Image (cartoon, rainbow, N blue to C red; front, side, top):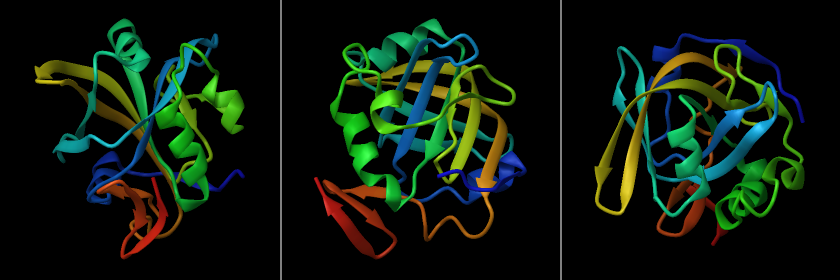
Amino acid sequence: MTQHKSEVNPIWACRGFPAFPVALVGVGNAKDNSDCNVMTVVLVHMFSFDPPVIGIGISPCCYTYDLLNKFEEFTINIPGKELVEETLFCGQKCGREVNKFEECGFTLVPGKKVAAPVIDECLVNLECKKKQVFDVGDHYWFLGDVVHAQSVDGEIREKALLYWGGEFRLIGNCIRKR
């Protein structure tokens, strides 16, 4: 399902970021389809609004961790409730063993300013260039400068998929338990 999106100011897009977002993180080179993977990430946080810097916490046992160390760019894609099953799938399967883009029916599209894959079916796409990596216990935080952002028209806060306490939610409503 392709939705009309407009380019938006990355600062505005980051200020509209949901409180406990679920992100589908895209990594690899979508321009030549090398080592592309998508992973569900719930450790997502704004580190700066201006300039927009966003961080994702990734366990070193994940294939995405290896790819984030190989590539300098990644995307953060915020799904809506219609992608809850795909979001769960991308968090349960390993990209070394399955092509999650194909299995979920995601369109593999390079970003406008990065080569990493953007998931067009998501409400928001943030294109990031890796800025810093640091170890915080059982996860590494990969910080990225948001260099391009696009969002569906309208208010995304009520539409964005959230995750808290083992449940996928929208603001105020649980739509699926894990």
